[in-house]
Amino acid sequence: MKKALVAIDQSQNSQSLISYAFRFAEKNSIERLDFIHVVTRIDLTIPGYVDYPPHYNEDSIRQSFLNMIEKGMRESGASATPFEFVLATGTPYEEILRMAEKNKYELILIGHRGLSNLERFFIGSVAAKVVRHAPCNILVHLPKETEEPAKT
Image (cartoon, rainbow, N blue to C red; front, top):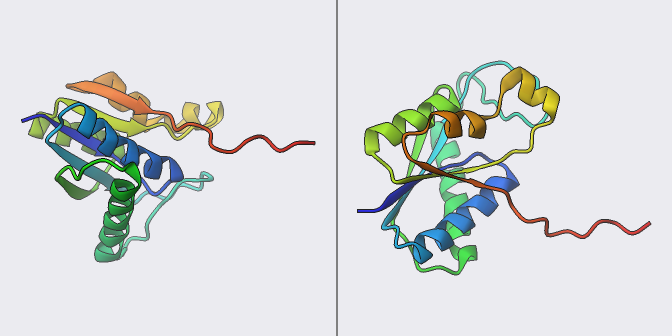
């Protein structure tokens, strides 16, 4: 069985990645997609970083991601590939790698958040760490720019 792991967060890039993953699965005969989001509970004040309070509502977060996945499946225009969603807690790249190794995926799809050089220096890129240590092939998704630059 060909299966792929898709690492997502709540960014617009992840919404694009979800749609891409369903199209990719259809074109490449992937039989199942597993989506993972990792909740971190560290206090960082980096712009754009999504952190959850110590007593986050797991059901609410899970439903939010299921809604994102279902929206991405509809927007993809691809036939419905079976999927599962896993909500994990820990360090994102470690949990993604742990799941990839445990379930022996053929591929990991992950988005690129576009951190600045300074942010990447201090906290690193989850995608870069996954690429560096992955037990399987990796596809790093860079969404296409859909907006034209403003005319001056």
